[in-house]
Image 1 (cartoon, helix red, strand yellow):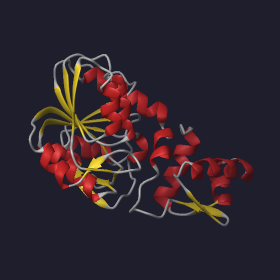
Image 2 (tube, rainbow, N blue to C red):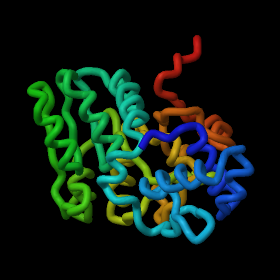
Image 3 (tube, rainbow, N blue to C red):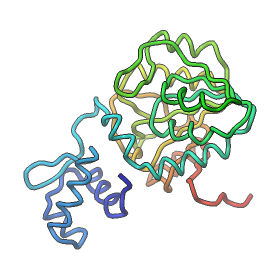
Image 4 (cartoon, rainbow, N blue to C red):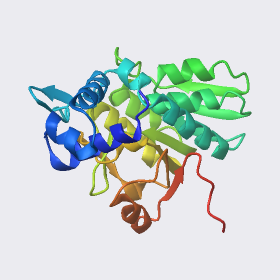
Amino acid sequence: MNLSPRHTEMLAVVRDHGPQSIEALAERFGVTLQTVRRDVQRLAEAGLLSRFHGGVRLPGSTTENIAYRQRQAMQSESKAGIARAIARRVPDGCSLILNIGTTIEAVARELLQHRGLRVITNNLHVAALLSANPDCEVIVAGGQVRPGDQGIVGEATVDFMRQFKVDIGLIGISGIEADGTLRDFDYREVKVARTIIEQSREVWLAADHSKFNRPAMVELARLDDIDVVFTDAPPPHPFNSLLAQGHVECVVAGQAPEAS
């Protein structure tokens, strides 16, 4: 789903202040109980909120991600905008590693007209998409295929990635916490992503606005390990300060770059 401003603010209230009653949300946003229930229903169906009798809270698990098909449908327009912004920055004739994630798959679609790319990936969806580009060499990592999202993970994948040194490593993420920690749910995926960071001359992170302040179990890296963050909205407090401290460029899709 694509979030309305009220949906986004509602998620922020629950994230920042904990479980909320339907009545409290209706009063805060100046809308009817029926409107809040309808909003909550949509957010719960997307896996962004969990309902309980009379109220809502964040999904309780920090150990399990939202199902792949749900993630594929969520923030689709935002992901497409991020993907276009990334593709504009990818030069022809460069080497990349693309990892797991629905935003990364959106990037692969935007690279179909690029020329002379060499792409290493542990994402079978990315490999299938980019194989349609005759000017792109696609190299697929070995390892264990996750049935849910066709991502390839495990020690064999880590060993495979260590063979390469690429111009750009592009990774997705499940959550960025307020201390600048990048987190994900599967420790096997995290080990591969860490290796991608090590084997890349530049590291780019694709993360829509819903990833900021989202918890997950396994630490992957920190914001200052990233060179460029691509997102769809200006990051909330305190992320601008963290990005500045880490000398990390932040590209907001659709926003004109500042004049130099």
